[in-house]
Image 1 (cartoon, rainbow, N blue to C red):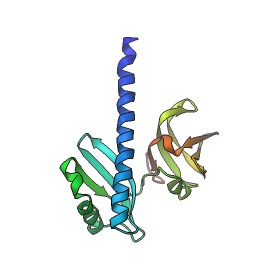
Image 2 (image 1 turned 60 degrees about the vertical axis):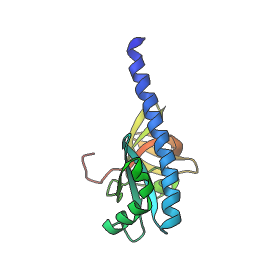
Image 3 (image 1 turned 30 degrees about the vertical axis):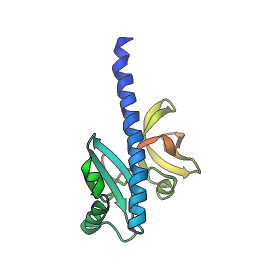
Image 4 (image 1 turned 90 degrees about the vertical axis):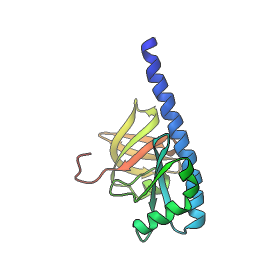
Length: 162
């Protein structure tokens, strides 16, 4: 039984990181949304205890000037974190219903905080974006994954090796 303790400690740590990311996402999205119209904070990821990456999007696209503007609005967070603001790129984050609605028919890679269909990692095509969960086609199986359970989710670049 002692061999299992490190696994559970790792799982508890991942849950804490996931909750901290969600908390930061809510705070940063509220701050940015109130100060820079039309900028969406897609995701916030912790790269360590003192490093956060903020993925943003804007209808006109994301450039260096926008990233700098977002960074300036988040300046108070620089006291506690090294802060990177980035465009979503080709493998853009997918976490919410709106993200999955835009990804129907596309391939995604997801990681969840609890098991669904006996696992926590999925690669497949988004077939539906329901009220509270996304339906992913993984091989011959369709798996419904609640948005709240998604720790990481990204589009898989078409033709890529990921």
